[in-house]
Image 1 (cartoon, rainbow over the protein chains, first blue to last red):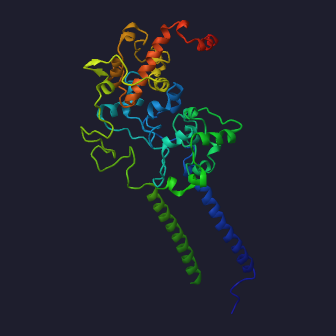
Image 2: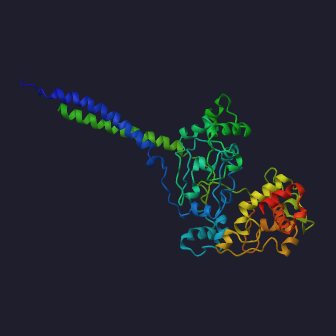
Image 3: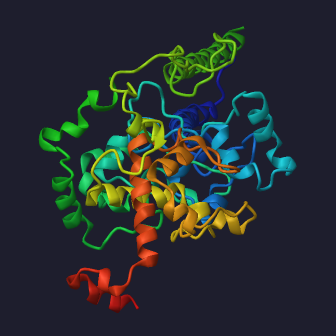
Length: 219
Length: 198
């Protein structure tokens, strides 16, 4: 009986081990990179909207975040403004612009405008805006410079690792309460000192790592 | 034959991996988007497509019984109230200033003359707060404008809660005094600050 395997088969056998293992590791690395890519996290990807509302334009007019997001200081949810808030100005300004027709239609018919959610936390996460603002976390810490975004995109992944960065060491991020809505706020050089003092003044209890308790966010 | 079996095995393995990964993702997605309803979500259950319901008409939430016409209607015995329903402290005044700058300044401008950014962009100009008619108007009149709107100005009842409305009115009064006051009206210890600004 002739030999089944040619001597060269030895090399193929060895190579297949290397290629096989390498392929497996490569696939895992690729998969991990994909998970962290903008494509999956949607970071830096502007979201299409029914009306191309520009935060950049409206913030440049001098409108405060809270003119529209009225419940951000008192509630868990910042609040998407009702169509009426748009009409406060757009009843007279740009009131014939075709681009705003969906807004006018919503106003006429009483049906809601369906905005595409940009910051959509998983529903097994409990998040409260008011608590974070009162603790001295600024809008831009999680949302980035929304005042410079024509269509809004996500600046941070909002993954658990992102939240924990601050829950581990709030003093690295906390700012004075009157700077929470300052979009151009920059941390001072001695942030750790200032932050530690603010953590104390704002009554942020970090004893026993309690900001890291599972139930803080998963309840 | 052996060769064929190997191929089949490999294909089956790949298939199983893809399937597993697929169900994994699907399960994870099901945790991300749970059937529970969060604020402003859509729902097919109700005719209007909204998940949130309005309370039944006539519902009064705890602490929301509007039993004080001065506070909630800006009226005393049916007439516009010419006073505030609670004491205007420094804290209230600062709150009023902040809320005025958020909600009113876009049209009325920071000084109350009615030349805000929205007006400069084409909105109908409101009367200046320093106009004699408005200086003479009672507090309750302002309250009713904030709550019910006036002319092209829509009401701000949904955006500004009751106590903030009064705080804003207090600040408007401060703006009005500011335009009419002289240096002599300023307490002596603050005069230097004013001179410095000038």
